[in-house]
Length: 282
Image 1 (tube, rainbow, N blue to C red):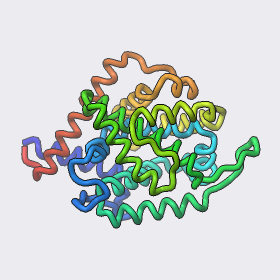
Image 2: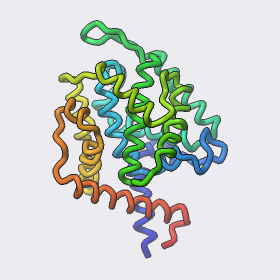
Image 3: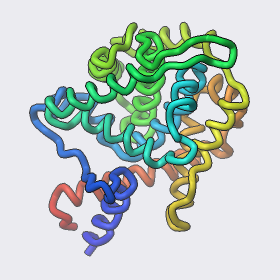
């Protein structure tokens, strides 16, 4: 009886993350991926809600580095194609986590080729390059810790410290292949690296403009608006206090209610995808 509901939810998520006009379909999981079935990174990256919440929090955190923001602002149409950027990022993560090793390595090579062509100069005269190993390290660690913490909050609150360290060890493999250095292998190393980067972070009018683009995306439909609002609020709630302060974002009201609603969404989507995996039976 509930199979049509499950299928409708799965179709809606698939439409969001896959450009059907280009024939894109969900990335199939392979037993010959960079990471085997049962790996921690598959557990974290396989949850739709946690990846959406963590992804927005990650992007807002990453763009506090002027060089990271400069590369995106100067070399992409993020203001006009936010959905396209979301899809490309999500597809890269899905491909490097779940797809056959050859496809993952090809995706990494494509991104490296793009990074090789991205360079520029900030307003203060500071040069930047997207293939700078230290800048890649910042983008990686700011992303990884937000994805992991979103999974811990909405998927696995009791996740062990050992598995958290394994997540950084596994996700770091992709970062190293992209050219990042240094790359943390444990949560403690990740937290120390973020602390080391904090003096380099800044916020200005362009940072705030980017913040508003992320938090106020075009509404695709009235039906999706409440979910969109819930996810953006959950992303702001996930961010550490210092990052919210740099973005001039107040802490969301009533965090327990917000987190409860987001957890409910996460459980609903897991139920839907579990049903799809089982052939839609309910």
